[in-house]
Image (cartoon, rainbow, N blue to C red):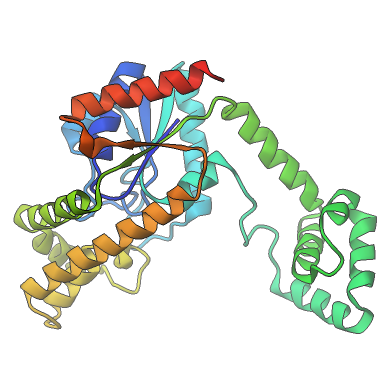
Length: 311
């Protein structure tokens, strides 16, 4: 099951209570909580919260290490297998939509079976012989993909041939494998989205940003810089840190940095909502209309049980 929603909506508190009730463990789907030493700015669950309910995919790599959605998918699938093997329930929690999609839907990443040289050769072949010739070649090696891809869809025809030439496997096999994995694991998928009225959410975002500063975000960022942290790294794009680095580099005042953090976080929350609202599987719950996180957790549990009973 999945519990998602925009930043600062209350996912951590609610998901921990839900996991306790369901004998579950949380698989974090947050692209920045994977980094060690970045605790305050990423709003990681506290150590006591992680002792209450086991969390996975937090503090996986150092800020200067490469990390991407493909690595996340591999580690998350291993965590899910481990959790289910112990007869516990994996609960995906976070606001990084691409990470959730990678696990729930499974897909072939652009760099799987990728070869710029092969792609360039196929593009030249398409220019010389035309799209029909390239499609006929695909029909020979992967008839199923050829039936699904129109001859005029040159980009997808080339992609399918590129995968075949590079890996020796038809792309249709990879499609099938992804669907099979998804059916096997998520035949009873429940996705809950938490939301609040915009003014309330923005107020929570501002409060969280102020709290991060009081907790020591500036000092945490200073220590990261002293250990080679750089805004050119993927981790360097994390909200809160990139703005604080500007302050520490003398590019703006602390007050300006805080306002930038609040502004950028509001914009990020808006993008998250657009992403998740496009998924019809998400069942939305307005937690701002409820009196407490305990009541919100009870409502989430009721939604989960209702959805599962209907399956």
